[in-house]
Length: 636
Image (cartoon, rainbow, N blue to C red; front, side):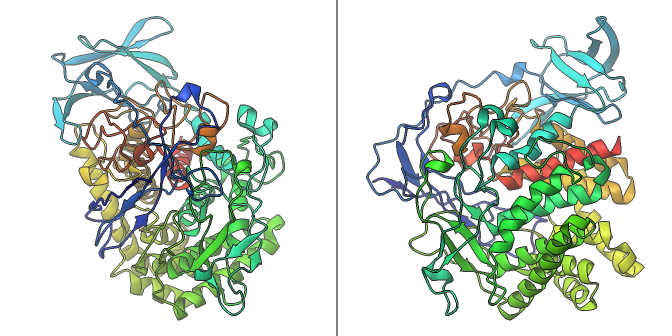
């Protein structure tokens, strides 16, 4: 068996953390294949170490590399893997880059036009072939992360709903432009429904899943306690039940720390924009009752998370996993034993934060009164365990080869959990803990390894009545400092998007979307239009205003990922991938050994199953897209 070990060291955003964090994900990947001739019988595999980061380096990625055929660990030497042939890159200099989904009427509207001698553009109304706007292109600028040059076309003054065409003399293609009050609703609903498609422990019926219907996988009613998680009350081999939850990414495992930020972000979308969700029907089994679908979907994961707490001491298991990644098969075809693995401070504090937030939000609905009470108790017990065990870092056991999500720095999780428990209980001791952590865990772009900003968002959106004006203003000033940095990045970008070289890490699209979430919160706090405009630009980036010409959401846009690193999309018999998933996006690490069209940070993307480095999907990348689109529609 050939093992490829790649150690990739990257820096994180300069404003992200005040202390270094070690983050590691381990994975293995199956060989690439042609998308339209896929077969679940194809189990040719290649095993590799997904990523290892050292010192202050941090990895934003998911953990969905492929293993061999079940039972979960590659036990037989796989045949050699042949990387996919290097694709012929599109001549992106001939394509206008813009949001392929559309624009809200009153939002900023910008396209990036490849280097051209032209100095103006035209926007034509398709209904009558009339030029409605002639505008000046900006000066040409080069974007170092792609080594390409563009001019910007700003057509924000056009606010009438309709279908338009953007024309630039000398550019071969004419770009389609949609403007309307509901342009984002379908992609928002698809991004939310992606969680349903990743549900564990249930059948997806065609009534709700259409052609992506599948049998139930992973009931998780016979989960064993791994030796790393064993104690006198639950010795190794003890069987517990831990069903439901969402598959984390391209793989079939479930991880508390990644569920934490994902679940929180979706809850924030509901808490801040409840009217938007009051009647949003995304066609899940729970649709049609009086409870918003987003809350029903979130509860599927909350129920699983609650089962990951040891009832004897309040500590929380880090993950529920097989010993190795399952092969390229459908969920119901996997048979490997699953385990809960090691309790740790990071997982326990993530759990405390999410359960406290859930208790506060769901308590407003009579149907969840009992759940809210149970989650409150669970959050407090988890906090107490973390106080008694303040530095228990997760250590990957030698016989476990799935995503690590390791963490050795806990001030950010402690700050977040303290914020949520203060808002829930109103006990001053939690506020004291929050304030004590602000010196070492200031605001940064949210990510699973960097959760401090989640605590700031909750404090600023829900805590003003409970705080002194001095404290509230102090927290707000710190948070707005981050937002201002992102605005500055926007203004200094040739593409007009706040993506810098350090942002092109594993899951770079989630960096863009989490920046957008920060900016929309800043806009809600201040009404400063610069924040919203910069947030729109980041959504535009993910949906097409980028050098790859991809809209990175499966099934949405003129050019979208067709072969994501997502097991159900690979192993089913449907040519199209499951819709609504955000692909990870460009990053120059290229840890998987695939052949990429470019090594430039913003161009290093490959739409192929082979590319778990850039084309995997995961729950924490979808959540800020859901939030951002809800926030933008809420403003209309």
